[in-house]
Image (tube, rainbow, N blue to C red; front, side, top):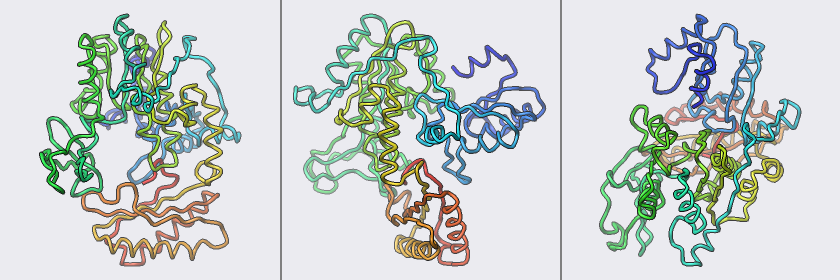
Length: 475
């Protein structure tokens, strides 16, 4: 949709950069820009390096997205890179978002950025009316379906009126995991410290290393036959909707249905052309799309992102819920959204339902100030990995001891080393050490000293060590 808007306005002076282009195709687009044959480049963070001879403007849409931070070396952030390049070339930068990152808003309130606010939607449409469905109450009332009573009633109403529905679930596949109801055993990947996900056609699959195995009929730990799937995936939602609303035409969009080339475009085009009534999917369906006939959005499991062991969990959940609700009612008819949650009183859920960014920001920034997390203070993550667990623990202990010695008079808090959320991936053990300081340059100095220490000590040769400033996720 974004690309077509630009094509209609600027014609063939527009080019596109994306991951599915071959190296040769990417090179050709870069050369066209360098030779002045195009004026607009649309793409992900790598588009920032387009060699325009006279750069005038960089627009970062949905600037709050964590994918703007590169997870590979060099670990640059597109926002900071855009601002740095614009400064070198005397260009302007526009950061756009309905739910700005706390970093961007913190700087705007400090006067580093100019804050421009859009108080209304472009077509002056009303914001969606948002309902919160307490799943605890649903269970007490005898509703064991993953669809709340309110959502089922609204879906029936929309289908009768010929309007479209989006159902959002932050999961993929047919089930979350396979577990034994007698002994509690969970089927795990032998190479990674994660549970295996159940897929109808593939058995059990590890989403980190790709390991696959057949679904067991008996529990491998106790032999019980009471082993089954904890079902909460997009495929199951699709099946439930088809069973409950047989008249509905249902499309599913997740990593599994978009693997083939142009998979995203085919599904989105079919839904935009109203060839389906219901679109079921993961995060990719609630980010920036504009479907005028969508008047209902169901957010099926708001808690999945709310209780991750990540200091950004509240921020991410608020952004996700608000962005999802924003897909409803973008045409002439007012939309509705239903947030299903076990935590209806949580401030991220309450403020998202009210679509009140300022209330959320004030609540969240107080927690960040209290705990000394970004953007109030700065964080350096030192992620170490090694196939030998004992050697990894020894190396991390020495790193921490050295960091304590070189802090000097400045206050630097050290957290860890500890196992991250996933302590082993593909037979490689992982540990993380966090350094927290008020000043960014303090952490840069610490990183430089630690790098020197690692270089002169041969014991670190079998370890892989990465540094990440203000990481977008807790490892």
